Length: 95
Image (cartoon, rainbow, N blue to C red; front, side, top):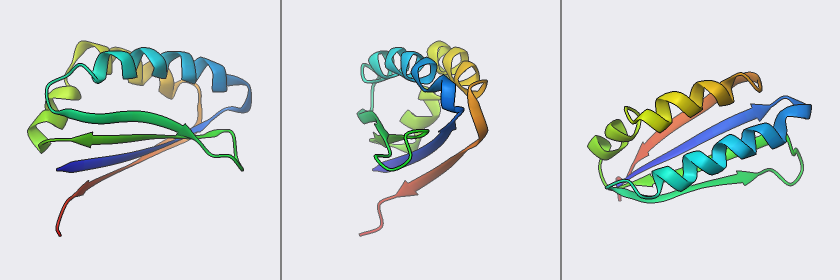
């Protein structure tokens, strides 16, 4: 099992634009083989902080996801609306 925590820092006036793009990304990604969970959350204390929480069966499934048309198209568009680079951490189950 692989988990991904992708923390995004939106420009204050671009939150809605990121959410619009993320909606399409989520709708397409949850249909992919190996995708267990793919959800975006907003920090209740800092609304410009948006976190994508992902869960994948295998690292291979995650790698396939990152090579899909929708990922390669949408993620760079989302990056245009960030005030700083996203922080992405990948975790594997150890216990």
